[in-house]
Length: 446
Ligand code: GDP
View 1 (cartoon, rainbow, N blue to C red):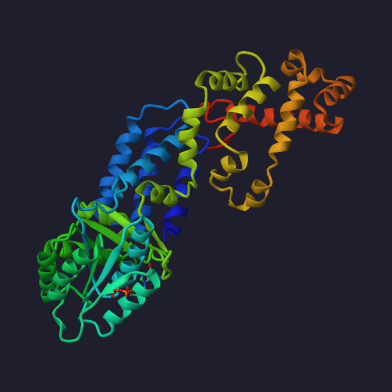
View 2 (cartoon, helix red, strand yellow):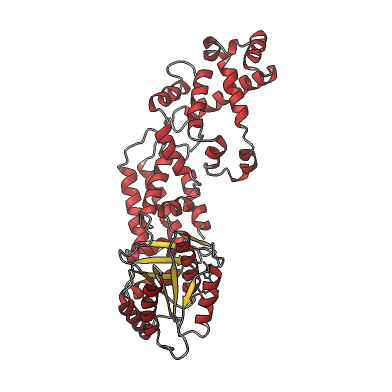
C-alpha cells in the first residue's frame, strides 16, 4: 500500500544520513521532499500542509537527544507527526456498561462491510465476547445470504429476517435484533447496513433511521482505502448524514497509494479503529497508528529499538566509549568493546535486536543464524585476558594467544579471529565517530 511513499521518504532520509549537523537549508529541502512524497501518495492537501509545517517547526526547535544523531532525530519527528495524523493513540471498541454493546457498520456498497462484520465478530469472540451478527442490509440481493455464510465461517450466530417477519424493513430487523440479543445473552450486536454505489439521500436516511432505532454505542464507517481522495469525500458525507465514532479501513492489501488512509483520521477527526487487509478472515487488525507510521517509514521496529536503547544504554558509559572512538580519553580497547557488546545484549537476543534494524531484510538468514554461543565464547576470551591486554590488544602475541585460548577453553584460531575482527571493527567505528554525534554504538549510519 505505501510502497512509493516508503521509497520516497527513505531517499529523503538517506540524504541526511552522515550529516553531523542539520542546517536550515537541509530542513527546507527535507520538508519539500516530504511534501512532494505525500502529495504523490494522494494525501489530502490540507493534511500535507499541516504535516509539513509541524515537521519543519519541530526540526528547527528540536532539542538534541544524546542517543540519536541528526538524521535519526528527523526520522523521529516525522514518525511522531505521522502517528499524530493517523490518530495518535490506538483506540478499539468501547463496550457499553450494560450489554449488549451495539456496533453499527455504515459505508458504501462494496466497501467491505459484510466481510468486516465476520472479521470483527471473530475478533470479538477471541476476546471472550459472544457477538450476534445482524443482517440489516436488505437492499442488495443476496446480502443476507452472504452474511449468513460469513457468520457460519466465523462460527457466529446471524440474526436475519424470517419470511413474513419484518422482511424488507431493515429498521424492524435491527430493532428486533437487540431484543434477541438481550433474550439470548449476546453481549455485542454487529449491525450490517445496506450501502449504495454512491452517496444518496435515501441511503443516508435509512442508515440514520437504523441508528435511531438501535442507538449504537459505536458507529463504524467502513471505507475502501483504494478509492483515494473519494474516501475523504465519502467520509465527510457519512459524518454529516449519519455520524460515526470510528473508521475501518479496508483493502489495505491493495497497491494504491495510500493517501486516503493517511488523511482520513485527521480530516474527520475520528480514529481509525481497525484495518482489513485481505479477503481472509484473519486479514484483520486493530489499527495502531504508531505501528502503521513505522511501517510507512520502513523502519522495521527501529523506533522500538531506539526506545529500548534509550532505556538500556548507560549514557555515561556510552559517552565514554564514544569519546574514546573519537580519539579522546584513551584508546577504545577490548574492555570497552565487551561493555558495548553486553549493553546491546541486554536489549534482547542478538538475532532479535538485529532483526529490528531496517534494511536487514536481505540478511534474514544470517541473522537467524547468529550464534549466541559464539558471543559467549567471545566474552570468555576477553575475560581470559589481562587488563593490560584488553587495553592494548596489540601486545597479544603468540604465547599470550595460546594462554588466552587455554584459559577460555577455546582454540587459538578463535582468539586470532577475535583480535583481528576487533581491530577491523575499531577502525570502522572510529571512522564513523569522527566528527559526528555519538549515535547508538553498534548501529552504524542510523
Ligand atoms: P459490502 O458491500 O460493504 O458489504 O462489501 P463486501 O463485504 O461484500 O466486500 C466487497 C468485496 O471486497 C468482496 O469481494 C470482498 O471479498 C472484498 N473485500 C473486503 N475486504 C477486503 C480486503 O480487506 N481486501 C481485499 N482485497 N478485498 C476485500
